[in-house]
Length: 317
Image (cartoon, rainbow, N blue to C red):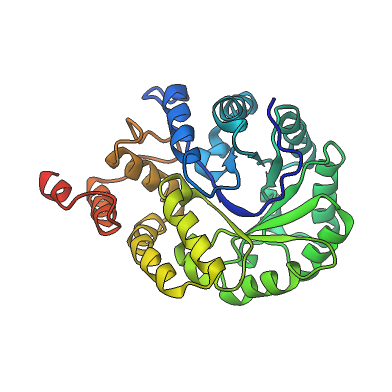
């Protein structure tokens, strides 16, 4: 299996979507094409699978293995693959992590256990990540949720996690507030050992990158990897004028993708990919359901504003 042993989680890392057939099975042919489309973008550092964007919560262990296998087959020789670890229990998380490592993943994206919504302490968080680190030395990216969800790691906890789990190398930062996000960037990217804050503040990405994030990992990269890559380069170069122009194109899409309810964000991205002719259907697995026509029309209008569709497509619709 292709692996990139020197991979450091940083730069632009799109999280791809997972197309389904009408019978809710994985549409492997469309998934392969989608992977090739995204991977063709200039300036990417890696691609993420088995995450929110691939509806990992509705995928079996064997389906997650197959998703990783397909990604490796299509783009693994070109780009590192980050594979998600979604599990409520630490033993199952370790089993998934071992599978991903054996399947050639170059890094792991570890989601917080759902029981943490009922309360957590630093010992629990450290134990969860240690169980994963016991089975693989792959770089680990911790998905940092907003603290208000109960699944986010408080400041003292995340510092303890980094101190006690050497292969914890980055966070995917969904802190939710600019203040918490800025603390992550200022503190974690200035530790004694290298550590990366990957922004997933996709509804305010330009502002987030202005804090100095050394990367981004976002599901909307499945639709606009080129715009995210260009924005990241412009912000790193301090080219504010160029960044603002790119952000003007991203803004209408961020507005529709990240409307309430947030759980539909990747549902909407699938609809955008259908409108762009990149996948054949926007089927989602329950409990998600297909969004209404009026919302699809808003997505079409946003794609026109982003200069990804011609204005004539609105009249045609």
